[in-house]
Length: 228
Ligand code: MN
Image 1 (cartoon, rainbow, N blue to C red):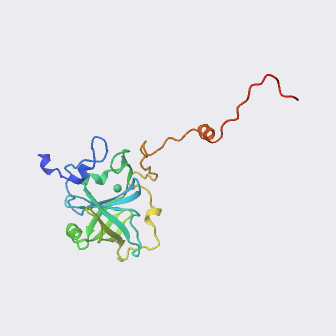
Image 2 (image 1 turned 60 degrees about the vertical axis):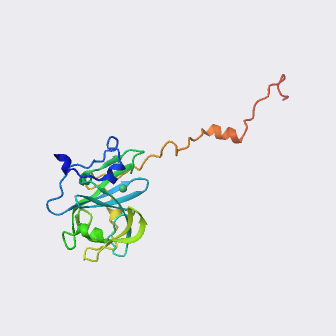
Image 3 (image 1 turned 180 degrees about the vertical axis):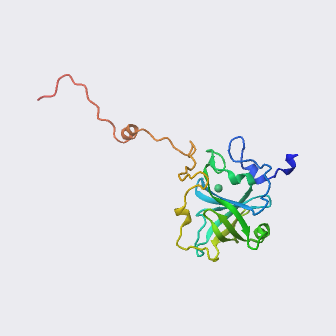
């Protein structure tokens, strides 16, 4: 019975082995009864970035924002659309194991509820390429625009995320720098992926380096001690 309710997210599932990663497989979580939810992950992967995820269409629509959100309406941040994530991902915080897709620590940097302006149109706005999202989070409060541009590879459409001039803008406030912590655990420090063994060339011991450059001065055996 639950199988019918279970969301299918083929792209999300294809990238992950749920026997290895602690990330959730799509389950039977139901959409929020009232306002849709949002979560922003701070993801210390190959490059640190922020994953902005908005609940719509029974999943979490996701954008990867390298520099994170800004409260300055003049600062437009690149946001690369990525695959929809399951609703269960909204409570995931942890480390994706080395060698897996997205390896590295991921913190819940912010979460709360979100509504489109006007309400009830997040899905339609995404299709049209212009989302106006009103965030009610711990760190993100007020409206941001997400506008699709013409760039980006297939499945990785480029958008720009920027603060609306709705009276909550704070051009001098650097929310990413001022609030680095997880809103769930309080954790601040994150660890990126370990490089694979192939990438990390073994480093020769110092004496090996020295010998390869400077042949050692060896003693010569003689019959008599040197004069004097
Ligand atoms: Mn990510």
